[in-house]
Length: 613
Ligand SMILES: Cc1cc2nc3c(=O)[nH]c(=O)nc-3n(C[C@H](O)[C@H](O)[C@H](O)COP(=O)(O)O)c2cc1C
View 1 (cartoon, protein in one colour):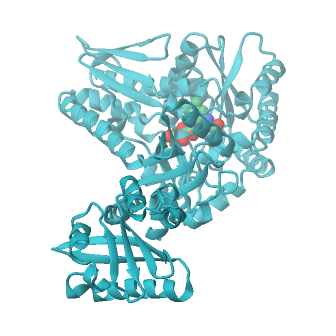
View 2: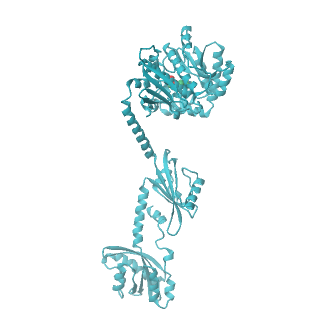
View 3: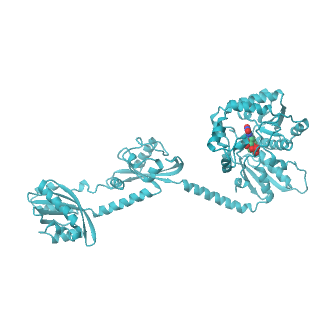
């Protein structure tokens, strides 16, 4: 394999334009001057041998060994060409070649080695009939090329062992591949023999660009003489995605042949290391700062992360300063399919803020939350000068949970309902409660079914939902977010089985049958509406919602979200009309009732993981 590669790389050992025209020798009258003329152009050696294998003439080359011969071996047998006994084999090669020329009158190419005064010399020879009585042996010293050949072998071995993809394309011939190293074989799954001599349209492998784009790039590299560089992800032969940095260089051989040399560098682990380093640096910095964070502030963040969030994405980040905690949106957690304008994301931030404020009050602080136009929340925290009355909901923060089970069917008594109805609401937020049997309950139910029909037939919605499903205990542990198998009442099963089962229920019919049972088992539906549908109101809705949920928890009332009609925006408009809303936009729907049993709690990432400098 190595030899084949060398041949690709180094020019012919015996380039045509350096070959000597033997015919000119034969016709020349002055043999000596003819030979010398040739010798001027060539560093080689010419020997004339007669039928008795006696050396008649030796015109010396420039190397020491043939100088020695020229002076010492005229009139001797060819053994004289091989000064020490060790070269016997090589002498045989020489003698046999000369004999064959005399016998068969053909040209014979051969090669031999000589060791002389501790040095090795490598020769390529051609023997042919000079006249009836003489054979002329033209010899070329290729020692330097031989060394070069060893060097090339070494280079090939190195190139093959490099953690770097190397390939060379022929700019003169369709950009055919001339060389392809081991790394390229590994990453693409394409073997050297499959690709060498072929172009991009004949061999297909995963790359950053299409074959057409690669051809255009290669042509540009040759045309402009400029290096082209790219970076991106490539699916490797083993199926994983690797970060690859590619550089394509224009190079040309001595004979002017244009080539494209390309290097593929796998920077996956480098990027991962960089990210880890960056994260470690930040964490170290933060760890130092964490030791500075007041325990009260830590307690507040611990309560904030217990807030509900769409698909349990936990889209919050915290920044702590001396007298304040900032809650920042983590837009990488947005849900473009179900929540295209991020309304539910900011509702979730409102819920987290409310928890934080309740915890602050419980610790004797007066929290003052501000919502900036860009979506950042700053909660100023001053220690209260006198003991104030608190909402008393601090205990409920840890108890609260979304319960998607079937409820008992028991109705919520009116005193508890009015307690819920009296939840303090932020400006521009309204709350409606309808009991089972009221027409609004039925209207909302039919919109929930319509919502299921739409969402369960929406490929993007389902793909996004599945991406936030956590299919077994290990999966939950690895992510600490998302919708755990357990909250759907599913058992802890191997991922493949669980994924199949959980995926198979994402059908409109199944969801509607399930939701019907759940609605029938509930006591009331709650609808939160917005008077203005903009970011500050979404945040305000979140705060109001969280107060409501904690009050429900306090009264042992279970709840679950049935938000479908608010998420499918045209349904939300129709629902508003059917409910005769004039200036209210339906934003959140919950069913309420009494749970038969508590559900397992959803996982949470620690506030530490969500801390930013
Ligand atoms: C704005 C918002 C919208 C939500 N929408 C739904 C929903 O449509 N369906 C659902 O089952 N849960 C919904 N949830 C509930 C979350 O999935 C739940 O809060 C999260 O999984 C964490 O679980 P927990 O509430 O038990 O702590 C929503 C939560 C929020 C804050």
